[in-house]
Image 1 (cartoon, helix red, strand yellow):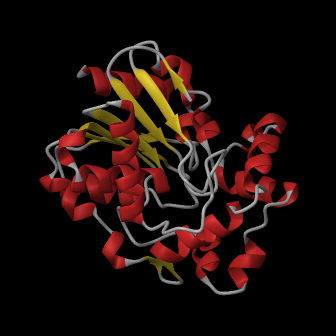
Image 2 (cartoon, rainbow, N blue to C red; image 1 turned 120 degrees about the horizontal axis):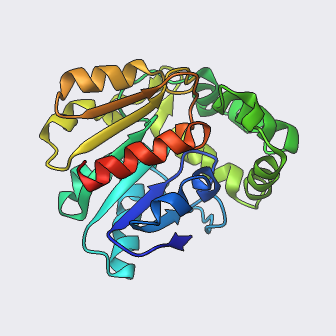
Length: 258
């Protein structure tokens, strides 16, 4: 999905989600930016081939996406898995990244919720990655602190894309390439690298995130004092939706240098 005119801004969703995760942000952000809300391969309405879904492949996809559209440099905002891909892209292809917004991002520490860790197990993952309407509802209830955000339209849209052929397999391959029962694999913890980034970084987090703990955000801010940190209380794993007005304001101020 693309909207607006201005400097390019790419929005990258998390595991098992789609660009619908940014539905409360696209219009406000597009008032100043050319916003591209991607469906990462294996997710949403994108193709779901039997390919490598590991982190470096995701960064190469973002590079290829920008190349095809003739985007020389862009700001990246990524939630959860999308944040990890955004950070990897900034580290591997620094010339492509203007600014970086990490939203409850994986990649800043090993600890993850058990709902993600257990997906890495053979057979158990196939059972636990429940793409039924009931399973999708359970996923959303883990994501939000305020469960009134588990609304019918969002539930039905995510259920539609999660049950597409190949979607479940892509999610499990993505998890198993980066996660074990102990949490995120050590090679994908990139928090120390924040200190070497040339691009300005904003970290946004929900204080009550049950999937990626908020202590990752605080630890990152201690390690890299130049990072800007914003924590929303009464908020879970998708602050871009659960605290959308405040989120949009914080992001626009950061991107514009205010």
